[in-house]
Length: 253
Image (cartoon, one colour):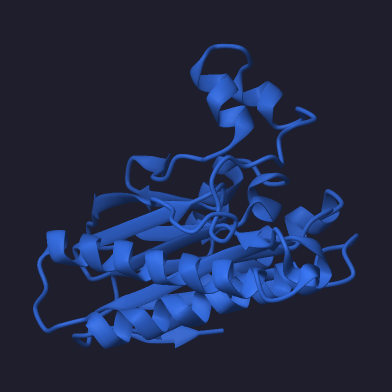
């Protein structure tokens, strides 16, 4: 298995409030990835995303045990998210400058044949395989609710004035629930985690084309970042790509 990551400030923001991490996990064929998109002003957004990532990983390594089942890894995800939320929430109470700060989070623990994904907010996870690209996670956002109710179409959601409003995040409340998903993987399948800076400028089909066209994951992510920038990259852009067809784990970026 191989994993790559990229983050960029984009073309209109002065600071990068996104944060990601990639690490090997447990056995020699597993990787953990975390991607966060902070909100709440320059100081608050940066702090929230970095604090969420670091707390998530600290909790993961403290609680992880050898040979965990899929169900146990799902519970581990929830404990990591709960602690990350608590850390951001408690820090937001310490200063008026941090009041209301928060962050999205999408994470995955990936072995050769399965990925366990968790998400809060509108940062996404995609599965890319022989059948094409499929979004794994569901957005916690205003436009996602409008799509579900039939008020707007997915195409209309891309340009809707409320497209950046999320309904669930780490930090604003003392407790938060995350959604978890189990994704079976075949040899050669990929998992792509990304913030809305990517999904707001690049279509799902274009993500699929880039991953299929580039054997090297770093090249695929560079291609997607370049495409986002050609379209103005109004937000920070972050993505992590994990491919399950390698015999040994490698983490790049």
